[in-house]
Length: 277
Image (tube, rainbow, N blue to C red; front, side, top):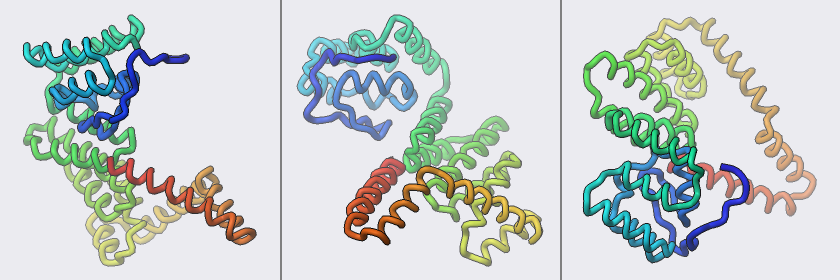
């Protein structure tokens, strides 16, 4: 979907909170924009009378709200509920509606476990790390000893480690990567654990890790060197450049720098809150 989108319905003064996606929406168009690439982040929790009331009162989509209530009463299911929104929104082209219909049909034929795994992965992609971790942990509780489940569990532990690493929780990241390596023996899980352990300030924990995985001091020194090279690349990034610019400004004009630093810190706060979902 590209170009200018005209809203067919009123923009809500009060948003509706999509619990499964950890996100507020203010209009039908915003919901459709979200649906286009994040349909796995929705689930049956949207199928409520409260959502229908929000559509009728806040968005003034009375006909759609009634159609959705009829679907709820008739227990026609999640796919029919979403398709009614897609059809009545006026947002999608014919090809886009067909594509989303096929995606919803695919979700019907996949297990709840598979759909939840894709949902957790999409939360990761959206940098909603804490929400992804919660979903991954829930999935692990329902995993079985089936070899395919064990392999998937290894992937889940690896992804959890990555989420914790993004949140700078390196101790938890190391533990997750180690669990992933124990289950699936993926070389990249051990490599990720080795990189995360470089950030730990607990010397005993680092030594235990090296002994446990038979990593020599020379190998660990090489890992730290490679990590230092990655950090050097980070120093060339736009984000790092912004920090360096603020540092120079703070020396030249502390008063001017103060407001800009506060703005940057506020931006980081918002980003961290988004990580938590």
